Length: 151
Image (spheres, rainbow, N blue to C red):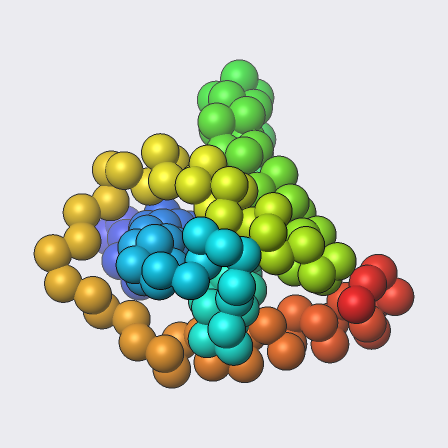
C-alpha cells in the first residue's frame, strides 16, 4: 500500500488564507481617510471585526500545528511556534475589547501596530470584497452578549 499524502485543507493553507485576509483588510482600512479621527462607519466596523475573526483563525491554526508537533514529541518546536504567533491572540483581544467598549479612537494605533506582522504578504490584486466582512461586527457583538462579556 502506498503512502497517503494529504493535499487538501491544512493548517498552513488556512493560516495563509487568514494572513491574506488580514493584510487586505488592513490595506483597505488604511485607505479610509475618516479612520484617523476615529470615525468608523458601518463597513469599517465590519472590516475591523472581520480582522479580529481572521486573527482568531490564525491562532487556531497555530494550535493545530503545535499539537501535531507535540504528538511527535517535538516540544521545543511546538512551543517556539506558539511563542512566535502569540501576538495574534493579544491583538485580537485588544481590538475586540476596543470595539466592544466603543473605544473607536483607540483602534487606529492598534491597527497600525499590526502592519509589520503582515509585511511579508504581497497584495498585487485585492481578492476579498465586502461579502467577506458584511455583518461581522454585529456577529461579534451578538457573540459577546451571549457570552456575557460586553456591549
